Length: 268
Image 1 (cartoon, one colour):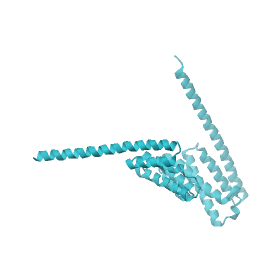
Image 2 (cartoon, helix red, strand yellow; image 1 turned 60 degrees about the horizontal axis):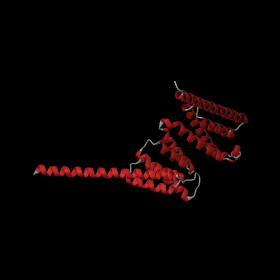
Image 3 (cartoon, one colour; image 1 turned 45 degrees about the vertical axis):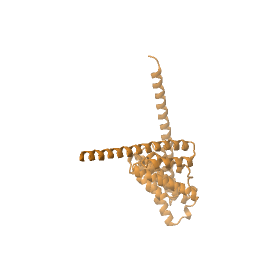
Image 4 (cartoon, one colour; image 1 turned 90 degrees about the horizontal axis):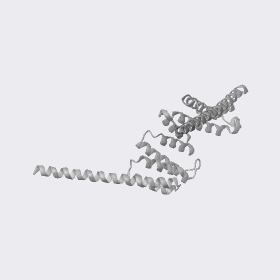
């Protein structure tokens, strides 16, 4: 009798496990189907439709990271950088919140971190943006990009204060001048670190050139001003030459691929 009871319990347990597993598998298949439909809508720029499909995908499989990524991307696609309407800011916040959900599932998602940083930057929240770029710096292969992101924010903060060609410098208070100098120095230091990691990072070279010019505009005497301007001019030329060198390398690699393809196609 006990053996029969045990067999019944085992059979019921196996049936329950099978049912749960089957339901989970079915839900995962449904999630994939809605994800694919959402991607089609997203590609067609039907973002509201895409959002609904991605939400249904997540309802069916709460661990489907791609669904969260696409949902965040769909919110972001509707966000207009630097626009301050409540509706636009809501889209930005929805995108940020969804990218944060991605990080709960995948703490090493550099895609999510970079997007959150960029969204905060385009929502005029520079300190929050820099905080996320610093988190991105902890992932070694993304450190140069994160340093560049911090420096770009610092340049914009400084330039907003100094004005075009430094025409507003004389109107700044001592406290404002000290803060502008601080962000310029921070940006310069970040870009120098980025260039140590990637010496051919031409975007970093160009922003460092701009920060050198900011430093020149903040200079208190003509000699110092000329020194920074000369440094900026030199760096601009270095960046231009580096771009030309990289382009030559791309062309050389393209020619080698073409020659190799011709050799493989030619009869023996």
